[in-house]
Image (tube, rainbow, N blue to C red; front, side):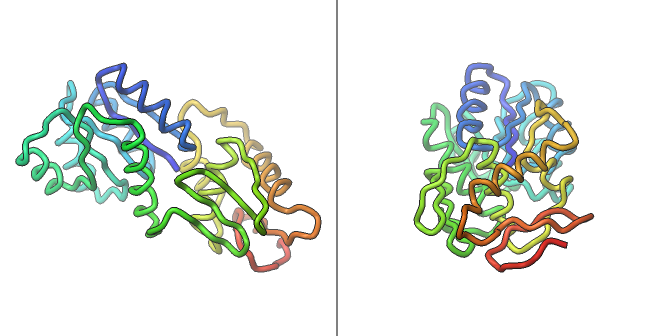
Length: 228
């Protein structure tokens, strides 16, 4: 759940960054095209929000380089250029969506969520793993019909695991996809947050959902399996 914002106008960049963070994503931001291209090529982002008119390196050049490198990131162009030809050129160059300035933050967040789900081939808002349900639109989580509250960091980790339900994910995968550059990289921080998730998801009478595969990582599944 990692998003990159590339926008040179500070008020827009800061507002979008804050809004996307509050929506549960890990967010990095860049103020020009050169910095944005560096971020975009060094990290596996799920969604990139990209202004077109950037200093140093244009947004269109960034987009073309990402697609030439076969980046899997979904790209949302965010720009004041509203001519039909501009939209067509952006989409033909490999953008997944196009939003014209000025815009409502709520619409941008909805589009980011759609692109994030599309990145992992999920169509609807709700992720289901056994009796666990996660509504990515409202950030509501229930298990066996019981609502469970999570912090933003816990929620991000849970959604990351749910998107890959049944698959083993390594600590490296988690670190690269759930945490931004400003995160504190203590060696045990992932283990700590896995423990927090277990405490909330595995109440008395409920089966274990998060399993450790020693030497490999973690897997979220509704199947009862012993850790090994």
